[in-house]
Length: 150
Image 1 (tube, rainbow, N blue to C red):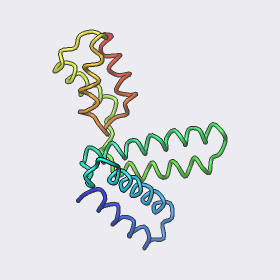
Image 2 (image 1 turned 135 degrees about the vertical axis):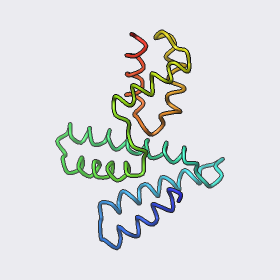
Image 3 (image 1 turned 180 degrees about the vertical axis):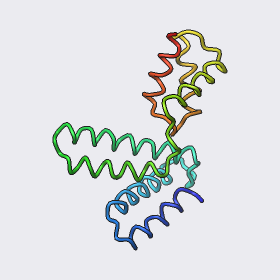
């Protein structure tokens, strides 16, 4: 089942349950999908990779907004963002733990043949593709730096 179909079904369920928070987040996700599908040069269908990238970007934007709201002492708005993050994350692949991320990155480093921090670009290119949606880019970059420094 495509993400769009799943979101439509979940919107109906949220409407029946009168769950306003879920409904708001699901409608935002659907809006993002529709905007992406109708962008100039697009075919009208998103690949699974595009869907993951879109949802990851949406979650990252909401995390940043929640952080700013917390800094400004606006707990109500921060809570709204965090609720939306929780809903978005239901549609993303499971996030890797630090140990799992380290193990996968060690594999990628061996495959690429990287041995020093100078090879970080090669590793990051492969790692970003292989771990899309499973780990944050900053976490990947810092872990790669640490592993290559040893």
